[in-house]
Amino acid sequence: LPRRGKLQRESDFMASVDSSWISWGVGVFILKPLKWTLSSVLGDSKIPEEEEVLIYVELLQEKAEEVYRLYQNSVLSSHPVVALSELRSLCASVCPDERTFYLLLLQLQKEKRVTILEQNGEKIVKFARGLHAKVSPMNDVDIGVYQLMQSEQLLSQKVESLSQEAEKCKEDARSACRAGKKQLALRCLKSKRRTERRIEELHSKLDAVQGILDRIYASQTDQMVVFNAYQAGVGALKLSMKDVTVEKAENLVDQIQELCDTQDEVAQTLAGVGINGLGM
Image (cartoon, rainbow, N blue to C red; front, side, top):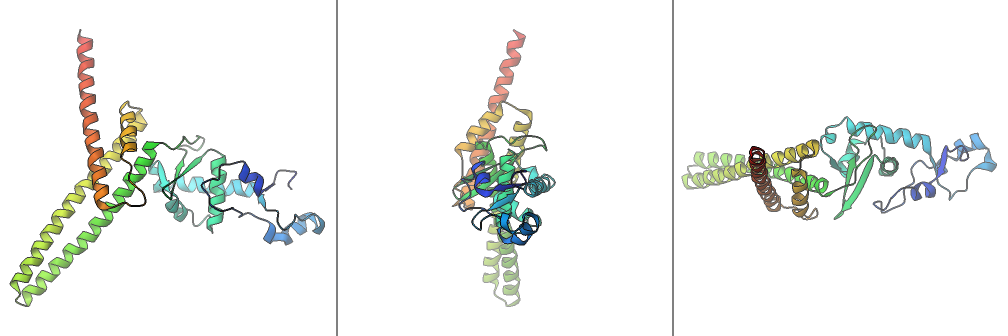
């Protein structure tokens, strides 16, 4: 089987692909626990040594293809990048354990259909956009988009938390009224109004995040010149993935929104110059 290329030493496989993002050795499709299978095929005398780990190449390739198609058919594929943890959850039915999952990603990486980046302890995966396409290197826009997605999730969670808080204030006000405690009821209602104003602010930030993401995707699709500005701007406004707060998320959104507005002004000015130039 090794001579026919059906089996490959794990050490050879690991050497053929960049596995630096994995902090431990991977050994999943190993035949060491399945000695009875090899015994029936090769005979007892031809069973590999206990320490030698072999990979069944065809099965690895088939399962890697299954992971790739599963991702392409999921909602996660609408974004250029995905968190490794989210991808792991998506592939739970295909990959029964983490070791299997990592090995399949290495195979996809070897086929140049995924690239993986570790940043501040977070692993980010980027897939090739078509079935026969090769993945492009991870760039600042990919990282920036991922961080915007994190911000969107964080802001959504905060909105949900504040909505529950506002509802509690409302119930507390009702209880205070029934108990004849008018001052307490008023304080609860004021707190409710403050919370609702905060929710409105966060909703506007969420709308801005989605708008920014849509514009970045459009610039990538249309190959617009403004793409370079977004690339530089988003890259310069990276959030720390280890210490993301609602305030940081809001600041990031505000700064990138300002960048987008500035780029619109520049684009309009350049368009005007172009028209005047043609008129001359």
